Amino acid sequence: MTNSTLELSQYEIDPIRGFLPPQDPLKVLPSKFSAWEMAAYDLPKLLVTDQIRKILHELPLIDSSSLTTRPEVERGMMILSYLGHAYVWGEPSSIETLPQCLAVPWYELSKRLGRPPVLSYASYALWNWRRIDPIGPLALGNIALLQNFLGGIDEEWFILIHIDIEAKAAEAINTIPKVLSAHDSEDIESFTSELAKVLSSLSAINKIMDRMTEHCDPYIYYNRVRPYIHGWKDNPALPNGLIYEGVDEYEGKPQKFRGETGAQSSIVPALDAFLGISHEDDPLREYLNEMRSYMPPGHNAFINALEARSSIRDFVVKVSQNDPKIKELYNNCITEVQTFRSTHLRYAANYINKQKETSLANPTQVGTGGTPFMTYLAKHRDESTKHLL
Image (cartoon, rainbow, N blue to C red; front, side, top):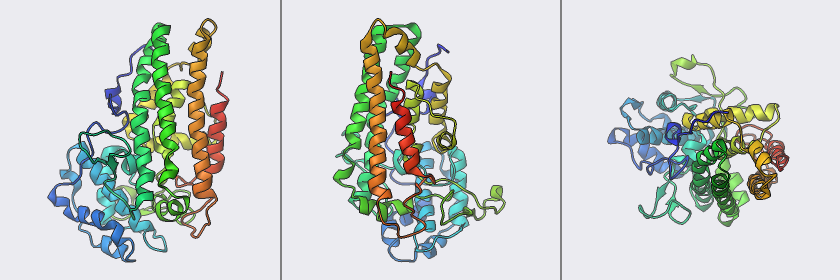
């Protein structure tokens, strides 16, 4: 066990907002990128014209190197991710080649951010919001998306739920170093009080998760939201992957990247590492580890740093002999994680698995990340439950 304190600033984690960016995401790029901005603004309209590929193919090839700040690079990445996925999935038949006007700058920005050139959770949720009241809370009721595919309340609500979950998780993520510090010094009083804050945050997360059905209908989600977030790895409609035209590093060979999925959020992997929830060494674990390459590198490094330490689990076992309330507190945290996974499994069944499949590109048995998601999610839930003390 290492006793060094985890400095959140080293891992792109904000002391107030957790995995969300420290400043509100940028709303518009410099004028040089107006062609991207106009296409992104019009995207919900263009996607119903059956001309989306023709229109996007005619975009100019813009050098992205003048985007210098992190908010600029993230906005550029978000826009190109939406345009790229609209190009691939925006017409009845999928396509295997992405034009260089999209492929080259998308690749360049992805390389700078340390994530693959595909729509990932970071662009879909973490950097895709604005506050209605600029000084109001970062929460449902005061946030809206910066970018949509088709738009509408169902798509908006689906993503906003994730953003609010990230905001509510901030307290848990930001309290983890304090719990670990108390663990290292065997300060039981501080350990208990800080772990209680983690539990409170997890409870708030589940309350937000329960609100998904308020404005996101399963049929609309499956048929109008989900089709655009698939990737091109283990997707039956693009078995060979996608060619990124003009990207020299890929040498004209098709690339396989997984689609956007909540498994790319850093919240649950960080909690697993912190609480000592382990997963069996099987294809599911390999998939979870693969998802980390789609996260912002700092967040991935934070999870790795947590895994490198002893978890709090053994400490809880040790001290709970004299203080059973600590065991109860720990078990309540495990239960909240298990509840989150159970809710996710229920939503996956209703919003995807039970829907009527109408296209090979939007399968009911394969997740947007390219996995047999019902099996995986059930296994996640069961492995969480097994860690109750």
